[in-house]
Each structure stands twice: as C-alpha cells, then as structure tokens.
Length: 204
Length: 366
Image 1 (cartoon, chains in turn purple, blue):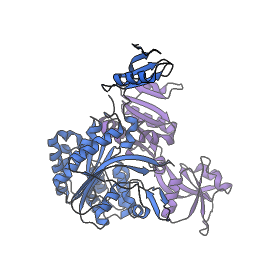
Image 2: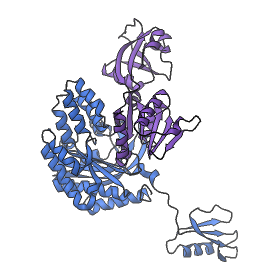
Image 3: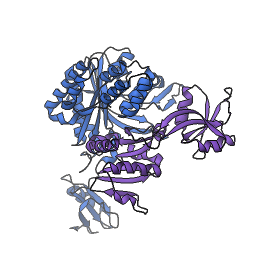
Image 4: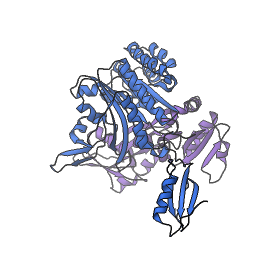
C-alpha cells in the first residue's frame, strides 16, 4: 500500500488527476464529506489531504511514503527527502516585489516582508545585502503599502494582485512548480511501487 | 511483523560493541566537550552545522560534541588504529529549538587500508543492521565517481555543491536545469543526471557503470566489485546495492560511502564512508573509514514486549514483610519477572500469573 499526501486545494486535485490517469485512482476521494483518508486496495493506494506546507513533514517523517509539494516549500524547509519528479503543474515564480518606482536605499538595512524567510535570507545574503526579515503569514502585499517593509518576497503567478496594489515584481528568485517527493528510507523498501507511480505520472 | 528485533537500546549498544571488539576494534572513550574552534574549522564535516557552545570557567569556548569521528581522528595515531565507541552526540534537529541527545554506536578504522580492511568495515555495517532487523539494505556509492563525473564539467565549487545536493535528492530535473544554465550541453547534462540517479543491485549496476564514459570509472568499478565479492561470500549479497544518491561532503570523503536502512524505520539508521581527506586536512597521512549507527533515534521502534511468564504477588494488609520477601524470591528464582503489589494496587498488564497472600501469609494461585 502506497501512502500519498496530497496538498489540500486546487493543486492537490490536479495532482490527484495525474495519478488517477496513471492508474493510481481512488474513486472514493470524489465523495463529499469530512473524511480525511481515502483508500483503494485494488490500486494499492491510500490518499490523504494535508495543508500544503505540511506535506513535506508528513513525507520526511514517514507518515506518508510520497507526497506532492511546491518547490517553494522544499526550498524553505529543506526536508531530507527524494525529489523524484517535476510534475510541471502549479507553475509560478518566487520574486522580489516593491512599490512601483521603488529605489533601494543601500545606506539602510532593507526591510523584507515574506512568508519564506529562508529563501529571502539566502537570496539577499548571496548579494551581501543586510536585511531585516519580517515574517508574515498572509497578505504580504500590505506590508510595503503600510510601510511595514520596503519590499516583499513572495510567490507571483500573474502579478495581478501586485498591480492592483501599486506594486510590481522587481526580480525573480526562482521558478516554482509542484514536485513528487518520497521518504528516503521508505523508498528503499517500496522502490517498485514508487517508481511505477513516478513513471506513470511522468508519461501523462 | 515487528520493525526491529531488538528489545532494548542499551542491550543493543552492548551487542554491537561486543561485535566490534570481537574483530579487533578497541574501545575509545572521549570527553563530551571539545573546543568550539575545532568544530568550526571542520564545520562541513558535520551533518548538521548547528553547534551548542558554552564557555568554561576560564572563559574558553567549548562545544557539546555534535560528532564522534572528528574527536577520534584528532587523537588517532597514523599507524593502524581500529576503534569503536558508544557515545552521546548533541544535535539540534531542523525546525526545533531544543538540543537532542542521541546515542550513537560506531567504529573507525584508521591506517593503511587495503581492500580487505574496507570490506571488513562494510561487512560490520551489514552485521550491525542485521542486529537490528531481518529486513535491511545498505546502499553504497563512491565519492570518487561523483567527483570524477562533476570534475569534467568545468563548474565552480558552489555550482558543484548545488548539483551534489540534487544528486542526493535523486533530483534529475533540477540537476539538468542547473548544469545547462551553467553552460553544460543538454545531452551531457542528461547523461550526468541519468548516471547519478542509478540505483540497483551490484550485479545489475556494475556493467552499466563500466560502460559510462567517466575518467577512472574502471578502477572505481573494480573497487566496488571487490567489495561486492567480499560481501557476497558472507551471504549478504542481496543486502547491498549501488545507489549513487548516497553523497557525503567532497572535501572530506574520497572513496566508498554508504547508508543503511531498516524496513519500517523512516530514516537512515547507519551512515559511513571513507574519509582520507579529513585526515589530510588535519595534517595526517593515512586512510580512514568508519560508520555510525544512530541507535538513540530508534527507541520508538523497539517493540513493547509483554512478558509471557511474568507474575504478580498481591499481598493483603497485615502480611509480614519477611514472608512476602521470601515468596517473591522463591517465585523469581528461575528468572521469572515478579512484581509485588499491595492489595488494591494496579496489576501490571504483563502479569500472566497472579498469586495472592493473605494476612496469615498463606499463598493462593489466583
């Protein structure tokens, strides 16, 4: 039985679609209700929905054998897992954004609002720029508008939200997409099942 | 099936230490502290670079030992030295603010190493895994191969480290992306990624390895084949595999590297490799290989056994202590675990037989 952690939401549903088409379906998952775990003994899979940022923890600690997670989460938390395949879905980018026309004052410490402090720290440290990280959990766009921060580091899909709030992307940090990850130890003992899933998903 | 076949971590530590001693390794006892500077100088040898430091009464900065190998190597003579240890190391897991004390048992062989010496250490690693479980795997790789593979691509150290990280994650897609963005032709990048993600039995992998267009590949394949032949004749052939995603730091490790796994435990339980380069950095000219078993992390996987022959002796208020003591000794004379409980107290679950003693000292089998 392969235990698969899916991220709650649109992306998780899309990822499930890929797996279903690859022969790892579980019709029960479409039923409405509050159930958290769905199993199909015929295809040998057990799915569960978890918060997207928790998928890597479930896999790293072996509660799930494999999982679907955004590259942003992998870069931020650096879990010790195998990253077996780029699913090519959930494409977006991690970018630095600032108020339109913003000019960096290098005489001052740069205040950066973000949900991804490690990614932001690594990026600015590679530029030798001193920064003050302001860790927020949502509505990052508000921070520069209310002068809580100078700039922000966040995921940008279309850039519409930024534009509507007088902000613009200044620089891309990294391209993001969803990845199929596996627990390193479990992989050793379920290698055939996991590789069958990887190959199935890759060929879709 | 139970995940581990051991019943107690401390007893397992003893069994492993006995195994190493039986093959000529001598015990190495070390201090829990080292000077902080020593670890800072060799930071990238440590699996985790977070070190817990404090100052001693004279103001000297010390660190709680995060690693054992460094201390052993520092003290080792250059001539052949075979040592084992069972020590606690102190680490701060990622995302945690607390310091973990982890029992680690392992060995190091420092000195002139020949093919037998390397084979013996890998066999002892396999025997250590076998002590823990029936179902285990030792993945083996060779740092020389990865260094040779990467060396021909003309990348700077930082990019090499990024690519090595991808190799360790079996992340072929990002490895190709990084390589091509640094001027490596796509076909060559794909070839690299394909080779680096190789894993399978020695029999299956060795011919594939030999066919690869990599400098020194034939010497490396010969070395791996020799290891396999040595291990195969111990009956462990199916328990070793080649997996090139086993990577350690290139600055310290130069030869064979390996990781051990037990079915049902979701993390690596054993890790080791050949690290002649660490000795070189410490000004010693010698070979070195060793491994550690992370015993302390296995506690929650030890099966909770319910004793089948356990007994409880329940006494009524008023029974004489000397009578209770004499019956307890009689009942436990053959090694049976016996728990003495006052009437009304909680009986242990594992008690299969319950004896009752009245206030007059008479014993009944309830």
